Image 1 (cartoon, rainbow, N blue to C red):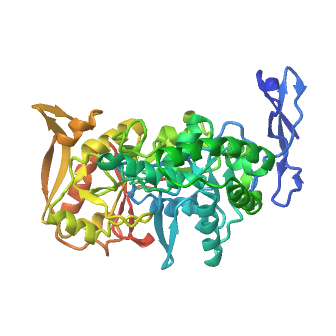
Image 2 (image 1 turned 180 degrees about the vertical axis):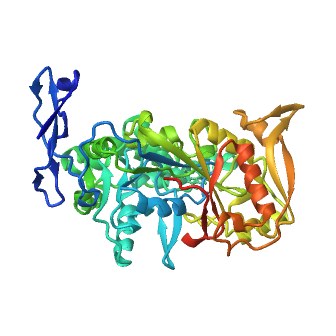
Length: 493
Ligand code: IMP
C-alpha cells in the first residue's frame, strides 16, 4: 500500500523518503505499509533506508508525529545530577542524544547496586533497548571514548546501540596540552577548566581547522589537513609556550588506529534522527554542564565553550525547536560550581564545608572540591526563562536534612539597585549582595521517604518555595543516589 503525501519542495532535496521502506535490524527491507513522497504527481524514489539500529524497532507510518522530544538541561553550574535523571528516563525513551560538551562532563550512575562513571557516553546505554547517539555538537576525545566503551564491555554492558555523529568534532592530542598551557598563561585570571582540551577543540571548530569524527574515514584528507593544522599548533606550542611540538606521524598513527575501532559507530545521524522524530519516537536530548556555564548566557568568560542550553540541544542534535515537546531542568537543592567565576550565594564558611562533605561535592572528572552555596532562585528563574523549562527536578534534598535554617537567594542588590536575575556584568555579579529569604530546616532524615507526601512538612515547604521563586513546578525530588530515592510527583515523560 502506498500513501502519497504532497510536498512541493521535495524534489530539490534529493532524498525524499519518509517511510518508503524501513531497514529491519538485520538489513532486510521490510515490506510493511509504505509512505512515499510525491511531487506534482511524480513519485519520488527512495534512495535508501535510515539505517535505524535494531532496537529502535519499526517506526510508524504517521507523518504528523506526536511530539515526543524532551530536553534535559542543567539549571545551575553543572553537576546537578542529570545523569541520574537520564538513567531514570532511559527505559521510557527510544533514543538518548548527547548534544554538546565533551569529557569535561562526568557523572556517576548507581544502578542495581553497581556504580558506573560516564564522561561521553549517554548513561542511557545501561538500558539495552535505548539507542544512544553522540550528536553533532559534542567534541569527542576518541581515546577517552574508547576507554569508556572498553570499561562498559568489561562490566557486561553492550554498546551495540551506540552511534557517533560523523559531524562531531574530535579532541586532538594537542588540545589538552594547549588547555593546560593556556590556563598557566592566564595566571590569576585562569578559568579553572577541566584541562581536557574541550575549549581548544571548540576553538578549532569555530576557526574551521577542527577535525571531525568523519575525517577518520578519510586518511588522505586527514594527513593533508593535519600537516597544515599541526604547523599552526606547533608554532603556538614552541613559540608562545616554549613547549615541545607534536609529531605528525604519531598523531596520524594513533588516530587512524581509532578509526578502525570506531568505524561501525560513525554515522551520518541526520536520517536516523529525522526518521525518529517523524515517527514520534521518544527522544531525550541530554545536555552536559549547566545554563550558567553556557558560552552566551553564562558567567563569561568563566564558562565552558559550548551551549548547554535548550537551544544548544537543538543545534547539537539537529532537532528543530518546533519539535521540542518539553524541557526539564535539573537543579540541586543548593548550588555548586567548580572552577572560578562569580557565585553570589557561595558559602565560604564551615557550613559550606559541611555541605560539601555531606553532599560528597568533589568532581567526577577532576576530583576537585566543588564550591558550595545556597539555592539561588535568581539563577533558577534565569534558567527557566532562557530555556523554557516546564518541569524541575530537585536533587540532593537529603543533603540539607540537618541544616537548622535554610536560605534561598531571591535576587541581588548592587549599589542600591535590586536585580532579579544574574547580571551580564560579571564584576557586578561578583560584588553584589545576595538577597535571602530564610526558612526553617526540617531536621529529619528524608532518605527513607518513598513518596513526596512522606517528606517532612518543612521540606515540602522548602521545595514548594523553590518552585514558586523559580517559576516552574518541581515534579521530581531526589533524596539519595539510588533509583529508589527518586520521588516522582508527576511523570516527566
Ligand atoms: P572546560 O569546559 O573544561 O573548558 O571548563 C570551563 C569551566 O566549566 C570550568 O569552570 C569547569 O570547571 C566548568 N565545567 C566544565 N564541565 C563541567 C561539568 O561537567 N560540571 C561542572 N563544571 C564543569
